[in-house]
Length: 186
Image 1 (cartoon, rainbow, N blue to C red):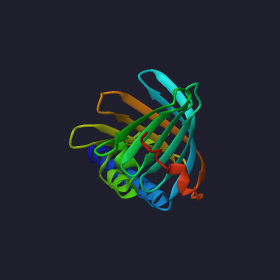
Image 2: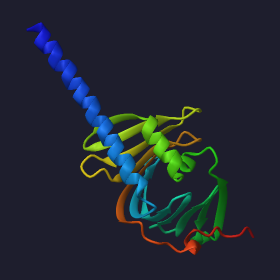
Image 3: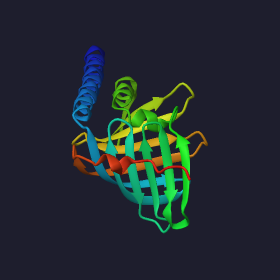
């Protein structure tokens, strides 16, 4: 009887590992076919909730328009991140080098994270858990039912926990290059 129970658990564990590996491969194949995404988002950072809409184009292009009183926009084009507050006519420039954005917006790096990450599941969400060389946390989230991208969780260099959840509107639509144009320094 003990042998049967042991054999059952070994088979169960093996099948569970195999199912996770299959899901990982399905997600990688699905993501590999995506060149652009338009999505709604909810961002939570330091108990502050923000919402809006984004355009993401691989590689390294992201534009998010926030639904807020400051008329906030975020644009990433290659290695530059710009945050604009149009209401106050303020623009801030940052580098995305060595930031989680560099890994999320570069498809080859994102796929590598998925291949090498530990996989967990929680409440119908597949979580790819990743720690980089500086022990920065970057978790990529996917829907367990249709394997669509749900967003990411990260801890930034200032130790802020950021949760960025998305709801995909469309994929592989063409965006004008001007959408991701970085404003000039004044």
